[in-house]
Image (tube, rainbow, N blue to C red; front, side, top):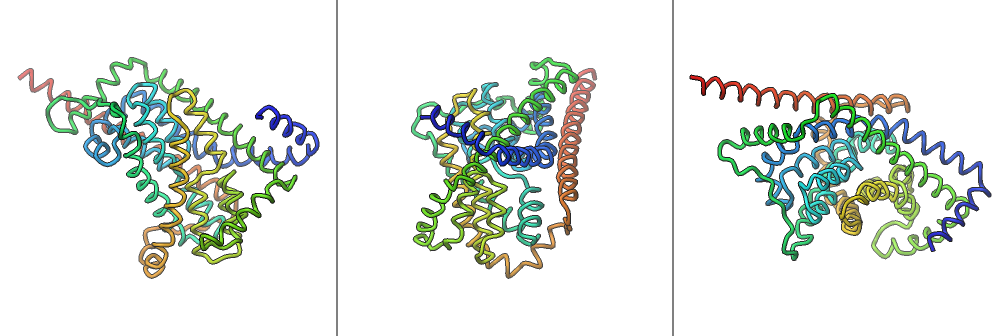
Length: 400
C-alpha cells in the first residue's frame, strides 16, 4: 500500500512540478528563517549540558518533585524546562538521549515525551498572537492554555504503564546531606565519568545538532509539498466536507473545518487559518490552541524520527497530542471570561511588542534564542563554579 501511494505522489510531482517547487521553497524558507535560528542554539546547548552532567544535577534536585507528580525521574525537570522554552522537537531529542544513557526506561520515556513536546513561547507570542491574530493580548491565554494543558497531560500520563511490574528507574544519589550539595556531587561525578574534553563536547554537540536540524528541515519541506499536492488535487475537500458535517454536532462552527484540516498536517498553516476563520475571537483562539498543541503531522514525523532508535512507542505520544489539543481548547473556553475581565492587569506582565515586518519577527526569534541560551550557559557555569568553591572549602577544611 505504501509503495503504491508513494508512486502516486511521485507521478503528481511530475504533473505539478511548479507547484511542488514553490511549496518546497516555502518549506525551506520556514526552516531557514524560523526553525533554524529558533532551534539550533537550543539543540547545541542541550547537548553540551548533557555532556557536562547537568542532567544529573537536575535529576537529584528535582527527583522529589517529578516522581510524585509525573512518575518520571528528576532529570525530567531538565527535559521539561528545555522543552517548554525551546519547543518541539527538543523534548523528544532529550528524552531519546536519556534513554540511550539508560537514565529512563521505556515507560518513563513515553510519559516524558508526551508532555514535554510543546511549542516555544516566541511562536505563541510572536507568530500566533501578534503575527496571525494581530493581538498581543491573546498571548497570555494561549500560553496558559497550552502549557497548562501540557502539565495536565503529564499528570494524566503518569498512569500510563502503571500495571507493568517494572516501570521506574532510580538513579537518585543515595548520599546523605543537603540536596543541593548532593546535586552538585552527582553532576561532578557524571562529568568525570564522561571524560571528554570541553572542546570535544562542543564539537560533537554542533555535529549532532546540525544533523538533527537538517532532518527537521527535510520533514518540513516534505510535508509542505505533500500538503500543496493534496490541495491542488482537491483531495482535502473530502475531509473538509466530513469535518463540515461533524463540527456542528459538537457545538462548533462548521467554518473551522478548514482550520482542522490544515492543522492536522502543519501547525503554522493551521494557526494562520484559525486567525483568518469567520468565527468569534474566542472560538478562533480555542482552535489555534488546539492546532498548536496537536503540533501537526510534520512535528509528529520529527518526533518519530527521533524515537525510531529507541523502544519508545508512537501511539502513547499520539494519544497525548490529541488530549493536549482538546485540553488546551477547553481551557481557552474556561479562562476566556476571567482573562477578558482582568485583561489590563494581566497584560501588564507581557512586554509590549510591535512586529510590523517579517524581518522584525525573525530578529525577535534570534534575540530570544540567544538570550535563553546565554542565560542557561551563565546559570550552568555559575552552578559549577559554586560547586568547585564548595569542593575547595571542603579540601581546606580537611587540611586543618
